[in-house]
Length: 223
Image (cartoon, rainbow, N blue to C red; front, side, top):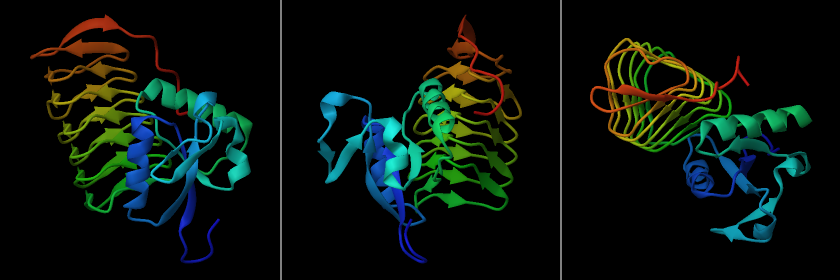
């Protein structure tokens, strides 16, 4: 850990595009972080680096690096599985990354392990769970709730009083009506217009959005 006033040590779990975006986010976050490296289970990538930051080794080695963690994996189900694996092995410290360009109103709570990317707007009276991903240029409006592991693609707008369930994934360009609930593990297809509540585990697409199929349950309770 850094001394008082110094940057906090951070290791990024993941080695794909989202992990590289997390590096950018950490370097331009509201709080100061020193990214010590990436943790990735792909053995063939050991010794690689991105923009001078090395892949340190497998995820299981996280305790060796005396750093806070952020799990930078886009798919919410995989992100949850990795977080649970890390928690089962010890007592990790998860960082919350918020880009300095994000606009945040009053009474906004953001859980540990969550990432809020550049250009996002969080208006007021909002609760954001743990390990949530809010991508670039998203808007989350008043009195909305995002459950653990919820994922918003770039440019998604969540209007007032919407409940986004755990692990729910809202794809690029989707629109949601005020005051409705999106169930745990639901998937909202790209460009969809959601005018009524979406049940847990439902995949919906179209305008208006219609149920296409049912996904496996996301899981019970917060991870």
